[in-house]
Amino acid sequence: MAMTPRSTDLGAGKLSVIEGMTRQYDYWLTVFKRTWRGGVANSFVTPLFYVVAMGVLLGGFIDGDPEKLEGATSYLAFVVPGLVAAHAMTLAVGETTYPVMGAIKWHKTFYAQLATPLAVRDLVNAFLAFVLFRVGSACAIFMLVLAPFGVFETWWGPILAWLSQVLVGMAFATLVFAYSVRLRSEEGFGLIFRLGVLPLTLFSGAFFPISNLGPFLEWVARLTPLWHGVSLSRMFCLDTVDWSLAAVHVVVLTALGVLGWWLAVRGLDRRLET
Amino acid sequence: MSDPRDESMIRARDLRKSFGDFEAVKGIDIDVRRGEAFGFLGPNGAGKSSTMRMIASVSPVSSGELRILGMDPATDGPAIRGRLGVCPQEDTLDNELNVFDNLYIYGRYFGIDKATCRDRAQELLEFAQITEKAKAKVEDLSGGMKRRLTIARSLINRPELLLLDEPTTGLDPQARHVLWDQLFRLKQAGVTLVITTHYMDEAEQLCDRLVVMDKGLIAAEGSPRELIKAHSTREVAELRFGVGENEALAEKVADLGDRIEVLPDRLLVYSDDGDEVVSQVHARGLQPLATLVRRSSLEDVFLRLTGRSLAD
Image (tube, rainbow over all chains, first blue to last red):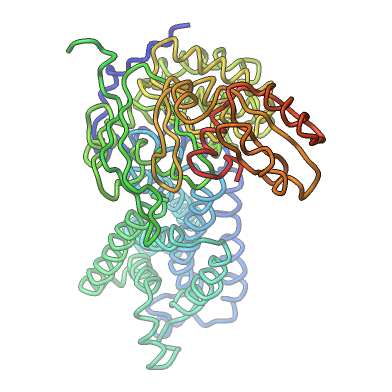
């Protein structure tokens, strides 16, 4: 067997962002092949239950008054864009809590990967690219399935709404990733789900207009990242676009995403040092 | 370049590593040349793993100078790691991938093309004697097989320098010998080996040269034979008296050797003639429960240098 100890043919210097990610493609492909079946239930069947229960059945008791429903002519049309945005958040949080801790603490995948020419930045990027794919595909399928229900006003609105959902998902993905790399024990995730995901889902305007919350809580709701995503997703679906407000939403979500990414890289760098 | 054996693979000067207030490595100098098998011997907490992680270019140097393959890990980390093989103390195999994929996917991280990755993975399965386990899950492997797979994985990029952190800890004697044999074959093939261990027999078997580390510092340096010669006698007589008696009897036999060590369960008398020590002990009317005369080992060197045994 040839065990030549030379490896000069590899020429492995600093990797470009793209190179750092493509080298992990095969890894993430096997992760996908292993997990997609469970992902289907999680990312598709569960939210469909919500649409049927909340949008169709519960919504049947609610008057389709555009005045009260931010321009929607039915409760279903009102709730769908918010539900998908909230779903994007939930999926993103799910993908960046236990899996991140697992890669550090249980499977030590990050340690193994870091012993190669890959850098911490490359690990974060590839991980987040996979989350992007998960969130993007789940939301896209979901939006496609809902199209025949007549909840979208234009053909182009849902496409921009989908991008909004992906954006809110990634803002949460980077922030929660940054949180997870700093966490020593998985008990901290309970906090994220109980005090983060659940109240945000319920009170960020996905199920009812935030004006119903009263002046103070409405103001609080406006500060939450999910509201920006819900509002953006909804204005595109219902064709009630306020472009200046849309710009604010995009800026806020992008800024959070970039901040989260920076904190994630920094945090993982420090965590893997020991 | 002249003789490749003079080529410096690792060069450290006053190398230090701190974690907050705790200084794990307190200023060490190391030179490892191409083709050598170099060892770090020391108990847990001596700073071996921290040093290894700095050499592996995954843990930044706190102060001092470090050059790996002539490059600075602070700036050339990816280039260095591309030419290293790392076998960490704790297995970092991917339990969710099968044995073959653990090799194949790891190779892809180095930018090795798919066909070459497949060929090398196949080759390495043979080298590690786990070809028949190619499709098995990692968790179904024995401890020895997992270790061999980890070493095989660390060879996927055909490294010039292989770092092995406690390679045989937790393995049964037979599995250790299989592994030693493989490491020896790698050395024959010209791979530079750097090994940390707290097993003196492992260090004696594998290392051309080693440093004894204790509390973040290098206590001694040399070949196993040189170290034993410099810091111990040729033989050791081990005398085992009853519980609690060892200390009390130490005085009565102290003059029989060059030096004496009192351990909780036995006395070690260092002398070039161990049998003579034992007969003198009997001549003095002392009746040890058991006696053993053996060659001095690195364990004795360590005891001499640090006052503690490696197992502490």
